[in-house]
Length: 129
Image (cartoon, rainbow, N blue to C red):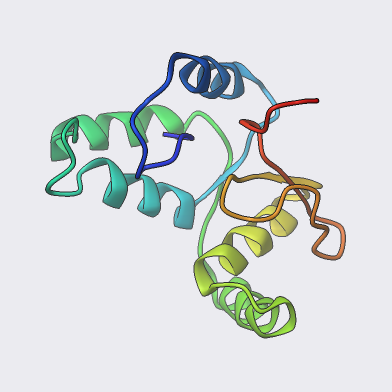
């Protein structure tokens, strides 16, 4: 779920992901839930989830605050996409975090430590030196 959808699961990655999900300071966005569903149920994925399994997991994730997509969020994401030269999906996640009042985004796709005007990227799977 928080691990790379293109990589096989690793026990250490699974432990980190579970630790993140046990926290009480996590917020999600509709964009993140959509991406989870698409990757988790992707055909050709050896351990893919069924629609029902993925839907149940998403339902369980709703215990966290979820930033809904709004026109304002869409416009902010479009502006951030252009400003930071990142994908629209990443910009939507950054702006959803900002709308939720988050100061950090957990991501292994964006550059660890990058600051997007007050929203900093943290890769929870990054090995510490």
